[in-house]
Length: 205
Image (cartoon, rainbow, N blue to C red; front, side):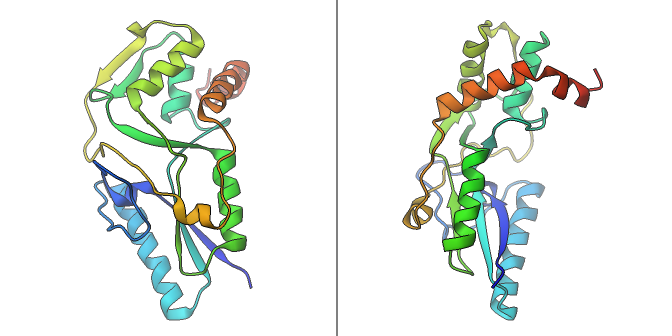
């Protein structure tokens, strides 16, 4: 039978100051975007309960990889540095995120589609937890530029401080992260450096 995979986000759990979010954790979205995702999760659940739709929900942490739109933190940081522009960071940069390579996210979705149980939720987390400021500094080091390019800007409303997923349930059906974060990040920096024609076309440059 065909299965339906509803792809959600770790943002539905809200800010997790300590510990980790489990699939059974309460939903506490703090932004309109996160609230819309939480609502769609509940809608998916209702169709499974009332119509028997073989739907599975995945909640993933932040993705990174090649071809990601330059509005996102990692490509924005890389491309701004390459263009000699400042890198904006919300607040003091201490907000923490968890990162997973897009290839691993895709692998996890395929695994859930084959081995997951309809009606269940599966967290997809990379365990690579790092503050936004520390992440930008890692990218700076790869490109060999100073910290004068960092610009702290006003924090956005509903900006969660920390996300942290427990991926034990996914691991039980055989998932294991394959891309080392430091290696993957370095390769992404190299990719954007070598493919400037692509992302500059998005900017109309």
